[in-house]
Length: 94
Image 1 (cartoon, rainbow, N blue to C red):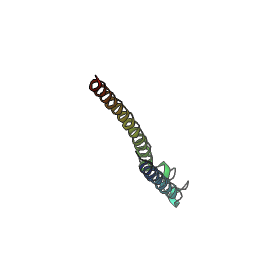
Image 2 (tube, helix red, strand yellow):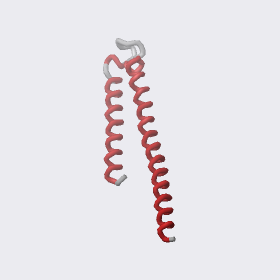
Image 3 (cartoon, rainbow, N blue to C red):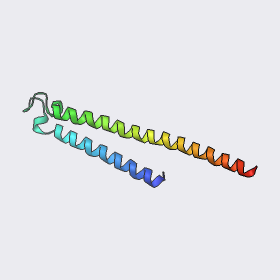
Image 4 (cartoon, rainbow, N blue to C red):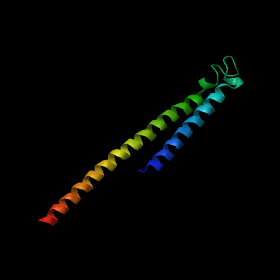
């Protein structure tokens, strides 16, 4: 993967995290988000937000893990390809 692709991917991921954090924090500072507001426990204690945050964390972890798995698979395939090329080169030289 080239440096440009890695940089673009990193910028996109950081951008998503910033947008997610901004949304959660702005919603938490709304009048309903304050303690004693319309909802018991404030905005961040509501079931919808807890579900959203949980899915965001699990999804982010799966996203990062997916990149790790892809890296491991690509390295294994590259090693296998190298061994096949090496064996073919050795047979050719005999």
